[in-house]
Length: 615
Ligand code: M6R
Image (tube, rainbow, N blue to C red; front, side):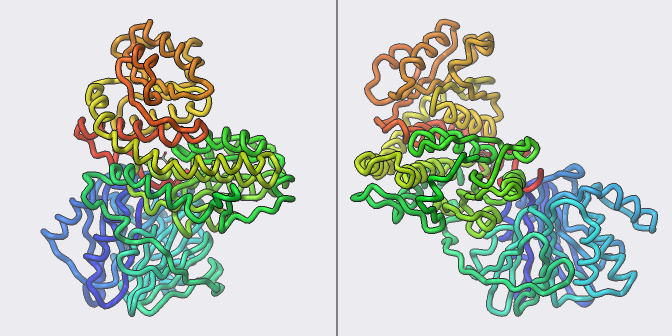
């Protein structure tokens, strides 16, 4: 959470910082600010509460220009979203400024120490202790900015990322990463350098980047960067070229990123499959996940760990991997994983799923797996992210940047990755014959076409959604592989429309929740043709008999469902192992339409951020 940017070079930093923050606004939008070195010995700051546009207007009213500069878009943790809590934060002398992502866990203790030394705090944030600590060493002990920052950082507990700038040393920015609090990526230009929490802020300028690992810091000048450990030892590092196209991070003709990303699923799935399957042989191979038959046969259990939407993908993955490769799979929300003391050993695999690859809970779960000797695999979208680098092997999602806070294409891509992983493990473990594999691969090859057909029906789904705009509550019910679809459909609706939506295993309704049903409490039931079809039909009957309106998601031509339900969202016939992909798309559209009809900002819903890099 929180986005941080930095620029040093011959150009005016202001438009570069503002543009970078616009790209990172999905990480938090409670407030935004920039600090720029404006002339001999002077740093000026502009800050504003609310979205970035407010800051842009503040800068228009009171222009500044210069270089270097740093910027921040905030997702509040300590202290309300107010101007005085907005970053950048300034030291007492006014000569040092800092932007920060993460949580200083011992900030109360540090604050008390600094107050006793005579430092005055102007905000409620934990960040302010960092800038005062740096000042303690820079001004108090006459250390260089690098050395003062290094000494200051050694006091901090928790996961934190910072960029620091100081008026006495305007030829550099100092940046550091402690723990898993979001990434720091350094971008290489021609005679200019960039810093950002995430790639989208850099891609307009460069694709040559270096990633800071936890426990590293860097001194960035306009000619390059030098990396160090927190002990001040120089570190060797690599500059890599990232493949993403900057245009992919633009909204284009679409009204919202969410809608664009829903529509990108056809291309995303095509790219996800392409190059990985051999149709003739019924084989799957992943470039960065090399598994030997011996290793595959030796796996005792796979622990899938993830958060939010990625967790729901993991739930579908359990069915896929167990059915195809006959390996026991446990799925755990990452925030619980490390505290559960899971029974993992060297014969197990911990498989993390994460769009950002920076979610603090997921990274902590991976670390727990590492500590216990398990093999680490990851399914990740953001190239170069921490999860990708931590894993022993990974599958990249191939869907390009996902900007909208509500995850869509980064849900369907891992479903397909997990299906392909099931095929691969099924082959290596001998649980699938060549004939079965060829049929399963053939099914997969038709999937993008089916999703394309679903998207052609967007207007039909939207027309149904418009009838449910005023609702206050809704149940999403599913069974078997579609329990996860129900959870995911409900999450999409609640996070962008603020309607109370609950995903529930349909068979559990009769054990309590059915008491809630009444004529203004609709049910969205997932009733495609699959092994749970008959069971789901009786669940729909039960809901109807309690007076609840029913929206059913069903397979084309299903008359039985049409007779029972008030509205039907039809999807084309899809092999049931792949139906979570075609079934979720109408639910994404349903949520999107209700939220936009309610006039809400679907790309940046309240209280949320795209990357959750705090615990
Ligand atoms: O980047 P990650 O996939 O690790 O993020 C996990 C969740 O924070 C994320 O899926 C979240 O639930 C989305 N807002 C859902 O749309």
